[in-house]
Image 1 (cartoon, rainbow, N blue to C red):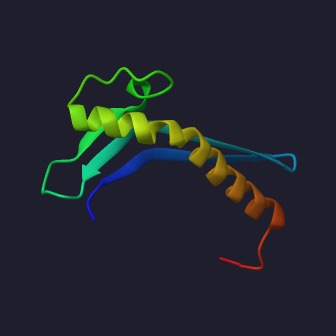
Image 2: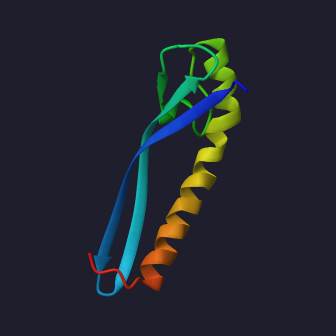
Length: 95
């Protein structure tokens, strides 16, 4: 089955102070890869796809971005929630 694979480049920052944590994620760009052919990946700055789509690239990338880019904020929130829960829960790992 062929389709788009979309990757987000990101920086995750966890700040701890006085028993509190702050988790932030910065996403500068999304990279699109079409799995059907040996096509070059296309990287699009995030400001061109969110919050209003303004990317003026190829027709296929535009269609994929309109479908996939709006999912990014929800995915980011889910990742941050998982990390926050793990930090609060703690582990017995001593690395």
